[in-house]
Image (cartoon, rainbow, N blue to C red; front, side, top):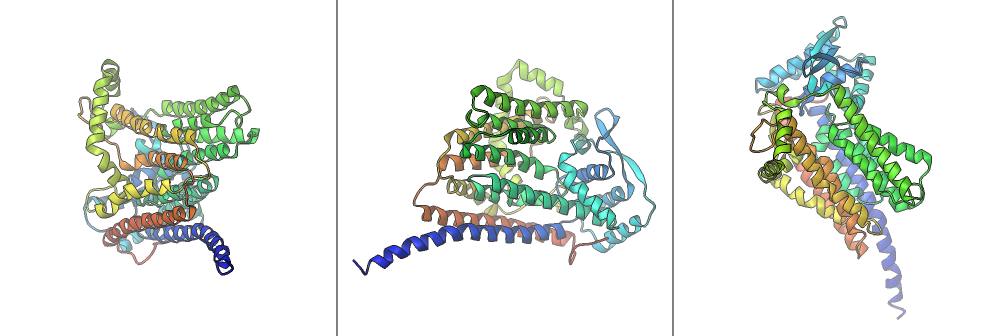
Length: 488
């Protein structure tokens, strides 16, 4: 017996050390990965090569110049005066990209220096696809541009500073989400570091806040449910403010404010009436802000992009034969579901080839299974079936909302499937699924095996994402052959 006693004592100590070591290893891996690939993407992604970056750049310039509201320039057209140097720099790159060849960094830098030496000037430009958006998701990029201007950088340096500002705020938002979440942290972190999400964060895109702000609200609601104590007025006001922020993002983000309804009555004021009042207020604020903004800027993408969309006719068809619309949506999911995953995980660029493509399926497709498996290993100490259902049930509803929006605003009447839906639009839905799985799974035992599996799956997720980004950076290196960042 005496010979076995030390072994019994040592085993819990080793287990405790492993429990403490696993989160540290995950944090080190995630930080190293984000700094490595985030830094390389910022340095080596060609200017305006990201998805819709040229349109985002024009809105960023407008906000950086102090023009928060876009001007009406005609039917279905908004824009206004923006910095002429930044606009001409963008046109130079788009012209080179449209010629399907590489861009000379030295020539681009020379143009930036030349434009920076010219007297400041404005040019009135129409860019309704981004001018119609509220300014919230462009504030990080605009702040970066403003800092670069104070530092005396030219338009190329300003563009890179805008990207850096976007990445910095994205990192802060992800850190806030991880701090708020009671569980599911590792799965959400893996999603946040997935290739397309990280590429968007290192670009001028509005997508980073459109992903992180809804997930932050979900994380806070889950944390408050887990804590179980009544919230104060300050917390309630914070939830309302976050809901207003959702209303200032893409229209499809506003319904996420309904997550506040998941707060138990004991947490949201002590009565069912107070719970419904707080949740209803948050949802009403989000939807009200979104409706008011989109009423002021009723941009319809189909006519702008020449798809022959007719929203009025589509709505009439929906009222006349809703089952036919559902058949179109079902056919769209059947034909495009796998492609949406490829597009939302392995895509790079937003221009004609070779400035656009997809990473190999040998990296992209396994990640579809690794992320949910990771979420199942990442549950809280106790299961939360209510929150799990509150995430998993709305996930397909969010996908349906996307299809409805693009069917009405983008798809030509009579189309067999819905057009215009891109994979990255589903990132908030993926977050819902991962959080729902983590809430449903709980902390299954043995804990040591669960934590070991979680670490292994997280490492696998980073390896798959890293392989995709290596392919992406290889393409960018051939099209934008720089030794480092350009500065002027």
